[in-house]
Image (cartoon, rainbow over all chains, first blue to last red; front, side, top):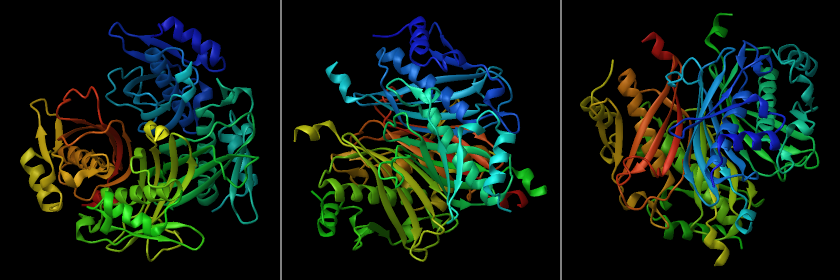
Length: 143
Length: 143
Length: 143
Length: 143
């Protein structure tokens, strides 16, 4: 059922070719998935900080990969709701996202993503916190 | 205090050069601001629908422009919180966003953005609904 | 399918006896539902303003009644997600909530509720804005 | 600066007399604050599950106490934004909430609250997850 890190990366490359190269996926030996996003000029907004949509994209991809890792290549699950709090302004530094699934239901998958910088791997000063809901389309039941 | 549509567009081009060309800004004769985002391949995700981060970016820009339109070129206001509900899957069609400011406080600006497609200009079947909070940095008070 | 105002009120009284008396339901001749909540001491918090949970309860009931009004006595729909922005501090005054349904799907119902005071019936200075998602339990399909 | 558990409870009793008795506050020897809410008939809604507003109230109080515990008796901080995901339907059982502060800024305080039941103290099947933002009123600076 699960997907390995190699399968996750090739799934991303196949289905999201336009963004796949923006992210680096890790799975720790304790089976904890994390996603890095090296930040460059295209992610910035005035003030030299990372833009909201860039951090949203990171949170969304990290949570999507956590779902794939749990339920397999279900390409058509879609985000139905996302809330994101931007807490600190990160500079031009690689961001690190850790997703956590709180509920894996038949129709809805709910969880959080915490985003920090590589220089704060313990998330003592997270830059953003998101909570996301994905829905699994009904057609899945018949496939 | 206000910015005209011409000023808004050149502000976008100057401060957000990487995305300015993705959006078309309108202000109606009743002074209602709306933003169009022509959708192309780069906005899509599996299933041929517009990706969440693309719609988030549209909501964020539309609300930001509505603020600029009210308080002038305050480039450093930042999103502190955003919630977005994805309600329908739009196809490869230009999206239309209408922002609405509910509160313009000294520190916080709060409002909503409704997103539809150009073929549904009355928002009878909106594709997404966002509520956003922007904060005005303290330094503004001294400038 | 729809429920009249009389049916809505008796549904509330039967299923939510502990709160039914806290709310007054209106349906305008243009078929617009609104809910009033007369505020008293039990709704207040320090500073003499209405507490967050009280406003949340108003938003939740208003949206629930809007759903009942559309799909009938479906007592088991449940809130899955709610976001509420508290924008102004209302004093000891009756609150007014107007719900709006943006999507009425098979599984999920999504919309907003705007809350103001009776002295601001045009919602020029709303006190709170909520966006809610309700889910319709699968069992409904077989009943 | 901090408030002890005894101070927290008497602060609640003094400023929120109408709800203070609904909650039990704990602080572990590792300085982790948690709040219990014994559930009774008044918290229920159709289907015998705990109502959304009751869980919202628990999340709000738990986060508020976590703030008081950090910054002292600042009675006038107010919730500006709250998002809550209802994930499972708890039965008539005491609920347990654990707040976590991610950012303690000059103007805004941001964090999460996870809610579970007493029979699931490890939060393996949380019933709700909230993210909250409180603001500290400007007047605090001069006091």
